[in-house]
Image (cartoon, rainbow, N blue to C red; front, side, top):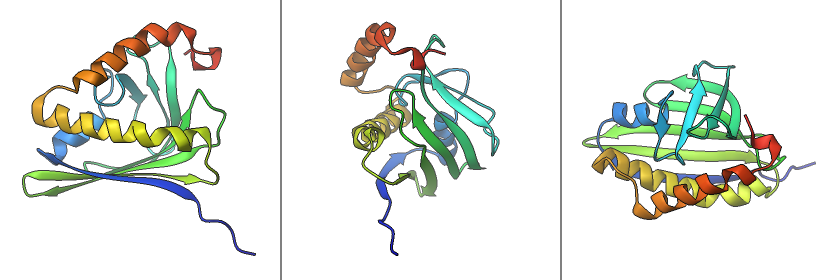
Length: 166
């Protein structure tokens, strides 16, 4: 019996800067990560330990999972579950490589058995996150359209279902 291949999304981007700056931004804790959907990462970044991405005010949880692997400043692997959808966990792998004055960021979001709500919706989300990560590292700011999106999202947060409340 053969099994169907698992679905995945793969993204790559080159960012002018140091691998440490990129690593520090994607693993920043206790402060808002502007490129990563204006969220706050809560985790000790130890394999086997939980993590979650919260709203800036700490009232809403958007993503949660478990840290699988940490190899600073080159690799971070974790499971991934949106609070909005009751989908099974998937996996996110961040791989960073310094190439001269640029950092190659490769993000793989995989281990989807079927095209779940998470699978369908993260493609655009990750593309935007990586674009904004590039802008943040290279210029110290994110796209204007993203700022508008974040403002609208903050206004809509009280309408989120209870399972999104921290």
